[in-house]
Every structure is written in structure tokens, then in C-alpha cells.
Length: 112
Image (cartoon, rainbow, N blue to C red; front, top):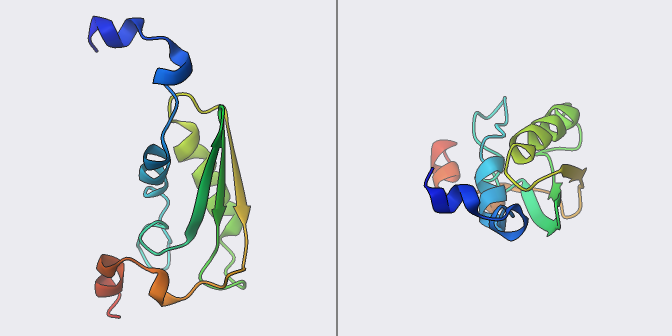
């Protein structure tokens, strides 16, 4: 770390960007499909309010039992970012997820 980075004030220089949040969310893997939640199109949105991050996400199906596990992983990975004091995952099912929401790479990996 350079001296400039060490001396930088924590307020704004440490604030995560939406891109930082999405990169952290790429660490959250769907255990059944083996792909990350961002590529699968399961992350609907991210809002940053000061040091709090709000993540709106869904699951491939409402019957999927991994919701609590996913929320904990989101809190862990996003919470490790500098400038984040709290992560608030919110699971929604509207709009319903569909395979069209996946990235082209995810579609290819899953044979769509």
C-alpha cells in the first residue's frame, strides 16, 4: 500500500461502488447450478446508503431452500468490503426469475 493510500480519509475513498458490490456478490454461488448469483441474474439490485448496502435478490424457484444460506453469504462477502458496516439482503419473487435473466456465459455453461 502506498503512503497516499494509507493517508486517504476513510469516508469517501473507502466507500464501495455498485461495481464493487456486484464483484463481491459474484462470490455467492448457487450450490445446485455451480454458478454465481450475478451471472444467473438472481441479483435484482443494489443500493448503497452511506455504510449500509441493500441487496435485492431472488432464487430460481420459491421452493428453493437456500435463501438463508445465500443471505448469510451476501452479508459475509459484501460485508468484507471497506466502508461497509451492514448488509441487508432482501429476497423477492416478483418479478419471477427466468433463464433469460442469465448472462450469455451462464446460459452457455448450462446449455441454454
